[in-house]
Amino acid sequence: MEALIAGVIGLLTTAGVYLLLRGHTFSVALGLALLSYAVNLFLLAMGRLTLNRPPILGSGQTDYADPVPQALVLTAIVIGFAMTAFLIALALRTRYETGSDQVDGVETTDPAPDP
Amino acid sequence: MNHALILPILLPFLAGISLLFLKTSSMLTRRLSLMATVALVPLAVLLLILAGDGGYRVYLLGHWPAPFGIVLMLDRLSALLLLLTALVATPALWYAVATDGDRQGRYFHPLFQFQLMGLNGAFLTGDLFNLFVFFEILLMASYSLLLHGGGRERVRAGLHYVILNLTGSALFLIAIGTLYGLTGALNLAELAVRIAAAPESDAGLLRAAAVLLLVVFGLKAAVLPLYFWLPAAYAHTSAPVAALFALLTKVGVYAMIRVFTLAFGLEMNAWLLPLGLATLIAGGMGVLASRELRRLIAYSVIVSVGTLLTGIGLDTVAGLSAILVYLAHTTLITAGMFLLADLIVDQRGHTENWPAPPVAQLRLLSGLFFMGAIALAGLPPLSGFLGKTLLLQAASSTPALPWVWLIVLGSSLLVIVALSRMGSRLFWNMQDVATTAVPVSVRRWWPAAALLAAGPLLMILGQPLTDFATATARQLLSPSGYMAAVLATRDLTVLGASL
Image (cartoon, rainbow over all chains, first blue to last red; front, side, top):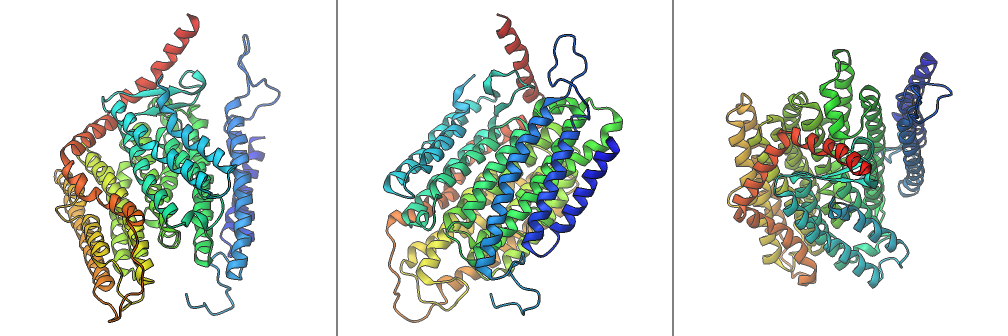
């Protein structure tokens, strides 16, 4: 299972970084979303991969799932969700303000407008 | 436990939430927002006095014992930064109200309060993940504040700022995950203990996590390869927001000082000195190349970050105390200059155009500009001189002496040249026409004047300030007290529960 999770995290990160480096705001937003999925999986895996274990250290219980990374992931998901929503709203706003969906606000085919 | 510790977070939080329900920028909203912000000043002074005895105040949230719950920690450094936050926020908010800047869009006041909550929380927390959460709170508020009022340039600069910081947040989470996976701790004190006791086989991964943290904090602080977002963002946002943002880069510097002195020991400082010096060079050249006043001040923020990093990188009590003096100076003066730049633009038009009509209040504005420029460049007799002299003195006993002296003095020279050129263009190169600008009342110019008054004031208070900074540096470089204070609470609360 470790190899699968590690591979998935690696794939998501690669795709995320690739999209993040694109010029269009839409690809960048998608890239950041993929990157945050990778980060969430990574955080979860940092609590070690276990199956069917209680999340609490009880009496006589020696083997348990670490609840802290799960709590961290929940926080990270909420924050990442809000940030993605904000970024998409901002990208739309940039589209209206600058008339282009390039990250630097300039269409690559047109000559750069005077600032 | 002293409940005053959580007030700097609770007060802006509650104020921000209640302001959401009020009409945008009505008189009531403005009064409430101003009152909540002004109240932070006496509160911060109280906490500063509390921390002044050299002890650590620990606040256990929910009364959970230290490594299991989240702790807030107050020491001299936190108290100093809390006071700086309150001192910058009050004039900035007043200026926004006086110029109707808060009415350019919706929800200015709640966002401002949430920004303060994030800043205060980041300065107080003693937990790495909680630091991330407060970073996100202050970033989220800063995204919206940066864009407040809208406009093409603002939106474009804002998009870059948001994307970079979202990437930074992802890296921060990876660093936190790695540290938790290796040590099983998030509390900074507990983390420090575990890292010191970590097996040799984990050293490489721990170093990787530390370098990731350096990248994240470096992005917030605007260190050399990661500062390109800053000039555009600070030059295009509204003046009060830019003044408040003078604090944002300091959060990155604060996080570096806090996390690296506590948990990673001396290792990271070897990176900071060359990074700081390189940032100084880049910032100095940026200042010289700026044709517009706001952009010039934005680049001077980068110069100040370079200076701060150089001081941390020296890794001595003298170096750290020098940059703490410099930190107080640069935050207040930069904020004041941003407000002053707005007043100047208001009266003479865009600062990139000259000759322009003369300003209406020539003596007042040029006098303030002169004072701010001298302080910013680090010339005697104003406050910038004190911090830079202490830094040069601190460097004189280290092998880095020639580099630090050359680059710190060289960048100061560039700042002096740029500021004198800008000053003569703004106030001497004028069209021979009568001014059409309306003089502004004291209600609008006092915030800039009050912040710039830090120049002479910090110099007059030089001795107590330097003493406080030295005591703070001593406290920071002997982190065993911090760990002991946090981890002692574990035994205390267990004892309390059994009684």
